[in-house]
Length: 426
Image (cartoon, rainbow, N blue to C red; front, side):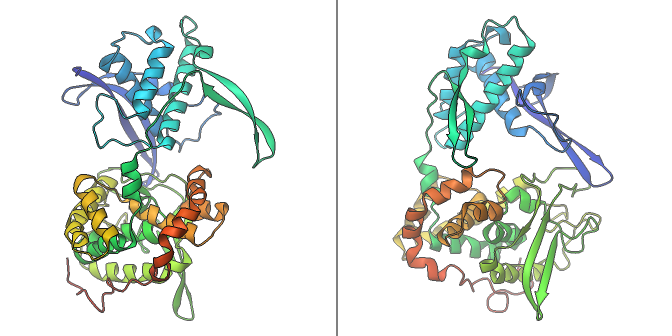
């Protein structure tokens, strides 16, 4: 292992008191993670045909992919001294090792989906295209890396061109991830109710993903109703009963006095809670509202979910709390009469899951409901149809899997405060 490595440094500017702009820079670090050099590689972390980007946009995923590639060719495998020494074979080897989870820093638990690999391919091809364009002395040319082929887009009914690498790129879509993402209904209930009973500080983060489809980092951005930065949620009433809940995700706000980033919003929007899950969401909100009475929080920001010190919870803190809840749920799964839940408990003893499991659960049930691709994209907050299409393409299998429990999916009473939990429960 080299004494040095490339890494991504994220810088945040705060303006107008609460608005923020994020930028990623690719830096060189030593073994102790100290920055020892700054590079200009981040300048090439965009599409060669991209127009001027919004000041609010960032290139985080692209920079991380590029840093991984640079470590591979500079330090891990080929030990080149300058980029002009690159060859198409080096690029091919990296992309296949990346797709097959064979990078030097990978382990048996590393999983990359086809979507992740595709994003990496695009980032590396764009990066090299811009570098080669900027440096005509490169021996390797763009034509050595990829070519274009035409295809007919059924959605737009127009002929388009797509970029195809000049070499095969293989990937392992990960059976382990598929097994862990196929969350049995009983396992979902056990995990969710463990959170409601013993980890109530993250209850609304889980509820926003499970009943509103928010990404975990987006849930960390949600503010209280009385936030001075504007209400993070709006409750609409009909005849004295909540008839709609709208979550404000239109803009990332700075939610901590120490300027620490809590997580990103992938698609700025206002997101409603899915109507079928509205009662369950309101139950969780009522339980959580009672729980946070007297707990510290930074009133100037008004984040919905906070740490014990009163600062807005970051995604990293949420992930740690979630994994503790999952570990506490495993014995209950192993003691369950449902063989599928028992099996899932055994899997969790060797493999971990993330809070994204709630968004996956949400997506599965909307798919079973029979909604269209446009509707699924809306409720998931997707920018493009690819991920939503994944669920619709597997709809028949999902319907078969959930047929026997479909009548139970909205009947969750275990977390009701008036039946099970006291207001002073931590």
